[in-house]
Amino acid sequence: TLFQGLRRINEGGETRIHTDINDTKSALQLAEWADLVVLIANDTAGHEGQDRYTISLDENQLQFCEKFLEGMEKAKKAKKAASVVLLLVHGGPVSIDKLVAPSPAILDAFTPGPHGAKVIAETIFGDNNPGGKLPITIYPSDYVDKVSFLDMSMEAGGVGRTYRYYTGTPLFAFGYGLSYTSFSMKWCNTSFP
Image (cartoon, rainbow, N blue to C red; front, side, top):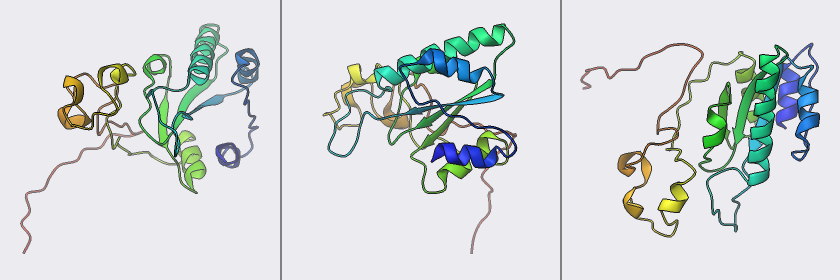
């Protein structure tokens, strides 16, 4: 599990978990002792045989994350706050419009595989340098109000789909991604035999 991966990498430290998204107060109290908080937002909206009607987190998770981040911002002003990483776990695009600004750090894990917990923990603790780039465009949450999910054309609803046809401002564009370091990529003009 993600918790086990974080606990394993956090050698010598104490790792605790809070799972009740209806109890922000207890989560904030638990965060008071921490140096680092990993706030996990797990998209549960769409599964096999179940359609998604939104690209946002479900309302309960969104409200919990908003309240928790607001509480952490207040604690920061009082100089009592831990660092916070918002960790997204999902199988498709998730729009987090309301969480971008208050989140000091965001790590998008999509659906991590069998070694995902270890790699996520290594990345958060700085043992791994992420160089991942988004393989999709993340649209603002109101995108679903402008485009019918039943319209599969690339120019759907006049606002389009994918990085190539979308005419609006994406929340995160295709290829977006940061790293702990600076690097550049360029095409080499090399001919091959």
